[in-house]
Image (cartoon, rainbow, N blue to C red; front, side):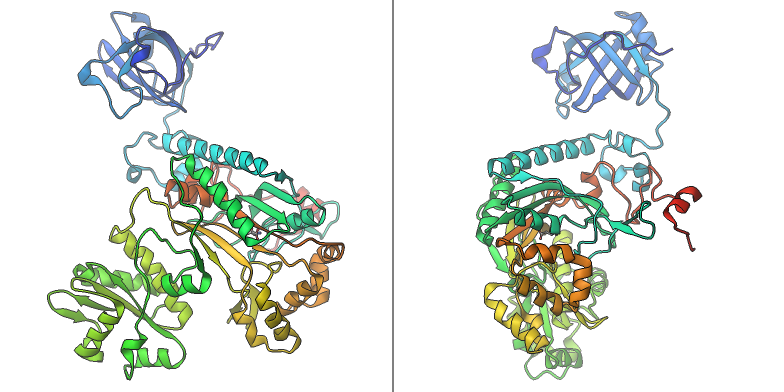
Length: 601
Ligand code: ASP
C-alpha cells in the first residue's frame, strides 16, 4: 500500500544537513539510493538533486517505521521524518557533504515503488557505467546520476549568466523561426514537408545566420539568441544533430569589439567554476596555427609544436621524403619529450592513429642510450642526427615524422599531437588556455568535385585588404587566387575545443554577388535560394558581424569532458537516433497521404 503525500512538506533537501542541524526534526523526500539491512538497524541512503543523506531506522526506537523501511527497494520514492543526530566519529563519511550526520527516522511514507532498474545507477567510477545505449534508452534514470545532474545544473547557470551578460551589454534577444528555408552552414538540412503546400518543404535552421543579419538590416543593432540549430551531418564525439548556440550579431562591429564581448562573456562564465580566464586571449592566425600546431583549434595546455624537417633533408634521395618536398609538400615532426621509452607497439599504434588522418606512414627517431630509427637504413646516421637536431630533440626524446601534402601532414600531426598528450599525460588539470584563431581562409578547394566552398559560410566578408584580390580573381578569371584569400573570420578556442566562431559579414550587394560567383552559384540559383536576403541587402545594410558559441562545446570546455551527450539532457546516439522515444520513427499512411508523399525503400 502506498502512502499519500497529504500535507507533508520537505524541511530540507537531501544535501543540506550539517552538524549544526543536530537536534532538529526534519522531513526529507527523495529516492532510495541504497538500503542496507542490519537486523534491528536499517540504513537508507536518500537521494535528491542536492545530495544524499543517510537515514537510519531503529527497531527499538521506531518499530513501525523500521518494519516499513524493510519493504523499500532501490529507487522507491519515500518521505521520512526524524531527528538529525551526529554520527559516531568512525562512521562519518568525509566524501559526503552530509557525512557528519544522519537522520534517525520516526516515520516513513512510501510514496511510490520502482521496478528493478535495468542498470545500476550508483557506481563508483565512470568505467563501471552500463553501456551508453542502455543508459540512453532509460535516459530519465541515467539523468538521476549526480554527475549528470550537476552538469545540467551548471548548464542552466551558464545560460542564465549569458542572458544576464548580454542584457547588460544592451543586446536584445530575438527569436527566429524554426521552419525556414535552407541556410548554408555546410551541413545537410533537416527538412519538414508542408501539408498545406504538398511537394514543398521547410528546412530546419542550421543556424539563424540570415535571420540575424536581417535583424541588423531591421535596425536592432545588437541581437542575440539562445538558438536551437539542426545539422544533418556525420556525428562525432563533439557533434549532435540538434544543439544549442549563443548566436550574436552586432551592427557597425569590428572584430575587436566582438573579441572584447566574447572575452568578457567567457570570463564571466568561467567564474562560475571559479576559474579566472586570462583576458585578452592571445591570437594566432589560421596559417600560424596550422604551421605550429597542425590544427585550427590548438590545445595550448601543453607545449609541443610541429617542426619543419626540410632543412635537415637537403639532398636526400629517400623517395617518400624527396617526392613530398619536390611536389611542394612537407616533412614535419613532433618531439615527444622523454619519448625514447616508446615501445614498438606504442609506435605502431600511433602510426595507425596517424593513418586515420591520411598519413602513409609514421617514421620515428628515438634518442635513447643509442639512437634508433625506422629511417636508419634509408637515411644514414648522419642525416638522422641532423633531423633530430633540427627538430630540437635531446637525449631520451623521440621524434615522430610524417611526410606528404601540407594539409595531410598538418591534419595527422595535429591529431597525433593531441593523442600523444593524452597518452603521455602531458595535459595539466584545471588549466584553461583560450585563444583566438583569426584570418581563416575564405574558400576551401574540394578535390572531389573540383570547386571552392566557403570555409565559414557564404556571407563571410574577406579581409578588407584581400577584397581587391577577390575582385581580380573573379572579374579577371584568376581563380587560383581564391585559395589564398583570407576571410574576416575568427574562432575562440579553449583547451582545443572550438568554443565560438564567427565573422564580419558582407554588407555590400556587389561583394555578395562576387562571392556567390566564386562559389559557382549563378545569380539565378542564388536568387532562388536567398532572393529575400539579396533584396534586403539593397535597402541600407549596416556593416555588421557576429559570432556563435555552441553551448554544449562551451560546457565541454568548462567541465573538461569529451562526450557531448554528458552535457545534454536528451541527446541522440552517434547514428542520430533517440533510443528512448525511438525516433526517428515511421508515420502512418494517412499522414503520408496528406503530405502527398510516398516512401520508396
Ligand atoms: N552562423 C555561424 C555558425 O552557426 C556563426 C556565425 O557566423 O555567427 O557557425
